[in-house]
Length: 399
Image (tube, rainbow, N blue to C red; front, side, top):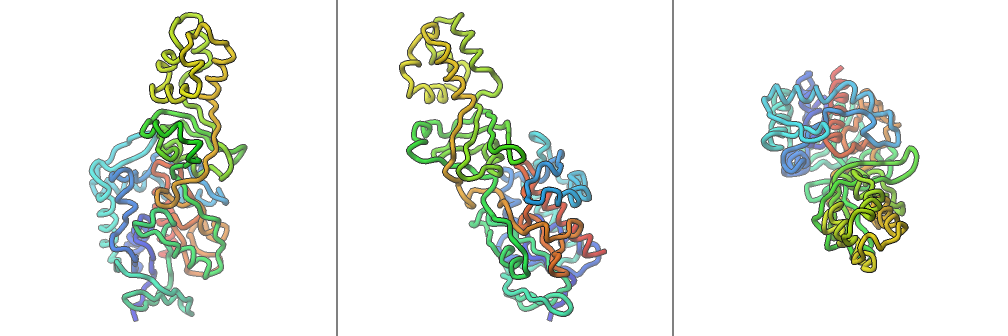
């Protein structure tokens, strides 16, 4: 029977990185994954160029029911550490926006780099190879796979979340965690487009494809999220960075608060124009907003749209501006795991060591990456959590 120091289940970002580090630190490592293709989430990330980290990563960029848990791993493996690894492999990259780093060429550069690191560590890689039962033994674990049963001192669960089932996402990691007595924080799609009631959304369907900068808010107090990013109208609702970001904070039944013109004071602009312009309201609003948005917004209010500004009451202009800059609407759901970039929730971090990612219930069992209840913002943060949690686990196992 094959024996290993560590069996790592899941050959995504966290699993590959953990395997490479652990192997190079002297451990005999088996990396196993049920999917035919390696690291598909890396491959499709960033439009095929992989937003592999964010230069400005801090613990404040992550959501968790135990918000301080991520601090240790993030402090000990920083964006610069991964950047240095990229540079050592001569992988070109650039900063696109707000600290977000992307490959110059393609996501495959990151995948090949991680596979090369695994090769340097003499990692045994079985893929596609399904994992069945995992049982605790006196000396560690017995792991049943499609290629036979192996014995290992340690098992690392790096199986990701439920996001994007078509590329292999399953609930395996959560089932295994429950088997060993772990609590799972409720999971839900995150970094995902939001949808609205079809009838209520009908007036905005013609805006599908329109993108503009907006400020989007939801929640209150410590649970409040607020982002100033691009918003994209879709046939069923909203997407774009602003909405993907806010989706991680949004709770069902609660409204969004949206400012569709965050760069201007619409009330003041319209009131000033009223004293200076003879144009109709519709023509004036088109100068302040994208034409399609202005026309859609005024379609239900023809009595205002076709009047000269000078004939409109200040109150009407104030209400119109307030509607555009304090638009409140409540989503009826999300586009689900099929469109979610990550899964919120996961293995309760109160039952894990923040320094090693090891279970506090079962010695030698570790959880890393997305399967854990740590969810980053959009913009490379989730990959940085994968690298940091993987490094913390690998170093602890080799210590």
